[in-house]
Length: 226
Ligand code: HEC
Ligand code: HEC
Image 1 (cartoon, helix red, strand yellow):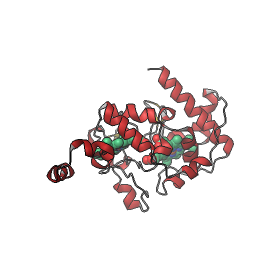
Image 2 (image 1 turned 90 degrees about the horizontal axis):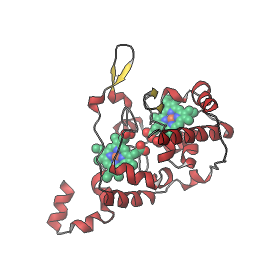
Image 3 (image 1 turned 120 degrees about the vertical axis):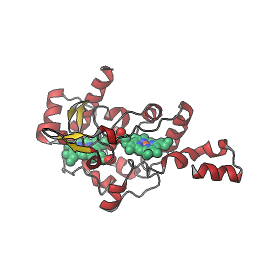
């Protein structure tokens, strides 16, 4: 509000502000768009939204355009699950009343903001280290690797109501994320965010490729189920 008022007082037109200014105006109160990421736990707890300063290395532009118009929840328990969990009869439950819906943009604004976000590419270095090999994996083998062998399901949903809820859901991961980003984040979450809650499991290249293929399979199934 303050900035809009200031702009009016200074005599800027709305159009001049909208030109690349929407991110600054509507998004920086919750998202870090200039880096670096949180360096201390205190800073990590204070985050109000995921980092966006490497958005161009992370998202698919098409997904950004549509999600920004019609956001649906990605992290079942928000940006920090500790703030959105309550004790249930048997186990912890999501405290939905504490979660607020994300703001939605018009098609024109979503398109403009997505284009701005895609320019933010400070982590080309990490992306360049990944090579995605084509190949397939059966659902059974994928789930075995993801769940039984590597324990990823403790924190991630693989279906809307199935899996852990402290991390982002992964049944639409490939619709929103670039495959090289997924590989790189799985390889070393702390290279992207030193205070990421996700552990570095020091996985082999073979396992990383398997996991990316499995996430791809999940996203295709979830797109088909619509
Ligand atoms: C009031 C705080 C707030 C504001 C303002 C806000 N966001 Fe968010 N944003 C969040 C939170 C919290 C999430 C995580 C939502 C989830 O996981 O479901 C999020 C998620 C996102 C995501 C998906 C991130 C990911 O990887 O999961 C994108 C993209 C995004 N916001 C873009 C924007 C843009 C662009 C703006 C400005 C037009 C904006 N946000 C304004 C709080 C905010
Ligand atoms: C202890 C909980 C935990 C475990 C175990 C875990 N993750 Fe995560 N993961 C997270 C959190 C939290 C994030 C999101 C960090 C953030 O806010 O950006 C994440 C992010 C991701 C992302 C990026 C998703 C996105 O939208 O940004 C992928 C892909 C991913 N994890 C895959 C895996 C795989 C594969 C495994 C198993 C090898 C795994 N995770 C194990 C907690 C976990």
